[in-house]
Image: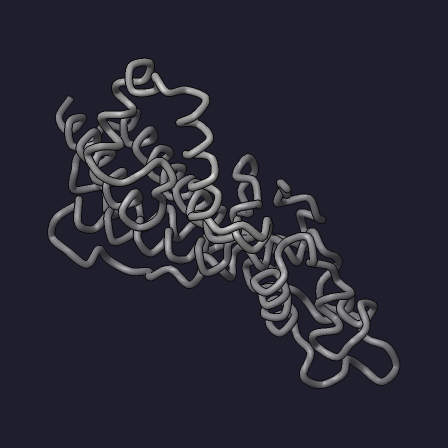
Length: 252
């Protein structure tokens, strides 16, 4: 399920994202106390975290707040605008400020680890397409922080753009793989161990010459680990390889 950001009213979405929502539309008695844009966004994130993107609706968010969906429209025009706000709120969990270390690789690694962890706390965010950015302050701050971390590397503009794109997509992709692996057992009712055990045994029966047909795969598997390995180890190893490539471009 892929959802595109920025589908709502641009004027209203950007105003809400940047803290200029204007006055809520009210009835005769005014809005009920305890309801606000912040509360609605928090409730939306809670729904998506607990039940996934498919469960997100204005009605579900309203029910979590003890309100009707219609009450929410006083503060947020609709689900499209709410999704933009939720996406940016989640990215606001990332640290901001000057790089922590004096080494660009350490700073980029810290940035990547924070983003990876953020995605895994809120895996529904991985279903929001990156084709069109939200253009919220937290999303832009995350990009600014990555640029600040990379600046000491001294990459020329073209390579810097490529490095930023590669790093962001790498973190997103590995987080998606980890999130999928975590959710597979619950979604299918079959554990990873059961799945691989059944198929490995059957594959050995059907392709007894597997080591001869696929010698490189066999050698890699024999070296340790297995094809289903995902998670933090794969993330750290892949990130190190990617940063080796960035380092190779320094001064090029």
